[in-house]
Amino acid sequence: MLRDAYKAERKRDEWDLLGIDREQLDDLLDHLEERLADGGCDHTLRHYRAWAGSRPVAWPELEAGLLTSGAGCDCEVLSNVDPDEKV
Ligand SMILES: [Zn+2]
Image (spheres, rainbow, N blue to C red):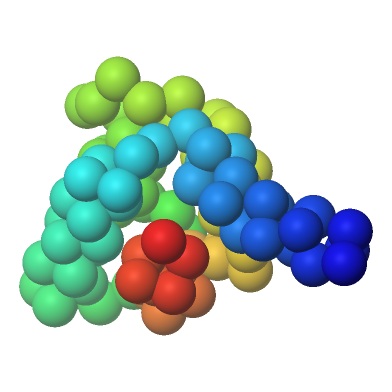
């Protein structure tokens, strides 16, 4: 019982952990989709960093959060981060 509550709580906290809200996340995923459609992924977080660098987001925290969820480059952010799964 306690464990379930803890798990639900953790799920809700995931985006808090990343330091961005749902709208920013959608924006980021749109940005990555566009950039990757253009030139593909070079297996860095280059496009993500360009996005984060121009916005008031706590991007070191966000980047650490992404790495924790297994997203080590732009295409992995797109494939591993599903906003609908986490809200
Ligand atoms: Zn990649």
